[in-house]
Every structure is written in C-alpha cells, then in structure tokens.
Image (cartoon, rainbow, N blue to C red; front, side, top):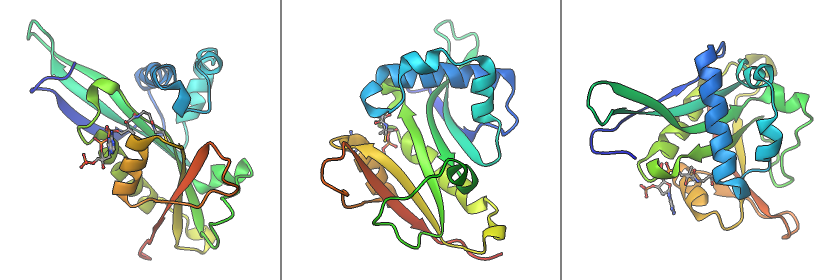
Amino acid sequence: MPNAETRYTVYPIPPVPGQHHIVQYKDLRLQAIQTDRHHFTSSYEREASLTYEQWKARLQSREKTTIVAAASFQSSERLSWQHKWVGMVTVIGPKILKKFGFKPPRSVTGCGVCYCFVGVWVDPSHRGKGLGKEMILSGLDWIRADDVSDSGVEKRTLLLQVTQGNHPAIGLYSAMGFRLLEAEDGLEENLWMSMELGVKPV
Ligand SMILES: CC(C)(COP(=O)(O)OP(=O)(O)OC[C@H]1O[C@@H](n2cnc3c(N)ncnc32)[C@H](O)[C@@H]1OP(=O)(O)O)[C@@H](O)C(=O)NCCC(=O)NCCS
C-alpha cells in the first residue's frame, strides 16, 4: 500500500528491453487482466501461456511504446528502497496498425496518421494519484516525437476503445482531451474515443 513517502516516476520501457523489464511487464500485465478482466478484450488464461520470447517481442519495437508508472517506497524495516511497477499504457504506432489492417471507426475521416492507446491500467491501490494522466501525457510526448515524415502528413489522430459505463476511464480520457465518438450502431459494448494532435513541422 502507498504511504506519504511513496514516490512515483513515469517512463517508457526502452525499445530494447532488459530481462528485468520483460519480467516486470509480464507480471504487471497479468495482474491487470486478472484484476480488471471486464475492461480488457484479452484473457488472463491466453496471456498466462505466452512464452518469454513472446513477451519480449511485445516490447522490442520502435513502432510502439509501453509507458509504466513505478512506485518507490521504503521497506517496513526502513533499510532499503523498494521499486514496483504499478501502472502501464501502450501506444501502438501507425506502421503496426497498418500491418494488422487496422481501420479507424467510420466517423473518423481524414485522420492523417493514426495511433492507438491500449492496455491502460493502474493498480487499484495507486489510483486517483494522477498516474493515468501522467502516463497518457508521456504517450502524447512519444507520439509527438515519432517520425512519420515519410507519410507526408502531419495530422495525428489518437484513438482508443473504452467499455460503456467505465466512468473512471472515460473521465480520464475526457480530462485529457479525448472525445467520445458516436456509436456506429448503438449496440457496441466498446465505445471509441479520439483526439487530434497537431505536430509542428520541424
Ligand atoms: C482508468 C484508470 C487508468 C485511471 O487511472 P488513475 O491513475 O486513477 O487516474 P488519474 O488519477 O490520473 O485521474 C486523472 C483524471 O481521470 C478522471 N478520473 C479518474 N478516476 C475517476 C473516477 N473514478 N471517476 C471519474 N473520473 C475519474 C478525473 O478527471 C481525474 O482527474 P482529477 O483527479 O483531476 O479529477 C484506472 O481507474 C484503472 O486502471 N481502471 C481499470 C482499468 C481500466 O478501466 N482501464 C481503461 C481501459 S480503456
């Protein structure tokens, strides 16, 4: 549990991850889909069976990034500082989306280059402390810095899906500037939210 001395840092996992990054990422992701299974499309059972190489492949890319929030706190004996990852956000870039044949929702037209936020999660003991917000801001920085000059477009559209009724998540994304898109047939369990990001030409 966090206390008054708990300190937080938010940073991206490097695109060439170390073994300790991969192990912590796997533990955190499995904790997320087990704790909040109704907010994720993937299942704990499926991901628990992934190999070390598959977890590594998820992180080892310059076409996407995973940002984590780490909590640092002193052990009860106050002898040493402990560090634990307590939140994560993944941003998937346009090249990967294209590779998987991603199509933006119909209401998004002329979106330029698309990015998707996925796997947004904060450990319940550390919610309400601004970590979701800090991780999204770090994701926005990554998108701004992403070099898509070969595509010839500057406009970037950020997309994500959220379960209907997930008020904390919809509250977070709305506070960050995302807007809810009109449901395509009114029956979807997941709603799309989007935000446009202007990038100054360099
Ligand atoms: C959604 C989630 C990531 C928010 O993380 P968090 O670190 O608690 O969020 P923050 O503390 O950064 O809150 C930022 C803003 O989000 C909104 N928000 C956060 N929690 C909220 C809640 N329970 N109800 C309504 N709005 C909320 C507020 O606008 C808040 O700003 P404020 O504190 O200035 O009012 C977290 O609740 C979570 O992991 N939920 C379970 C998994 C999930 O639903 N993921 C999203 C899948 S699309």
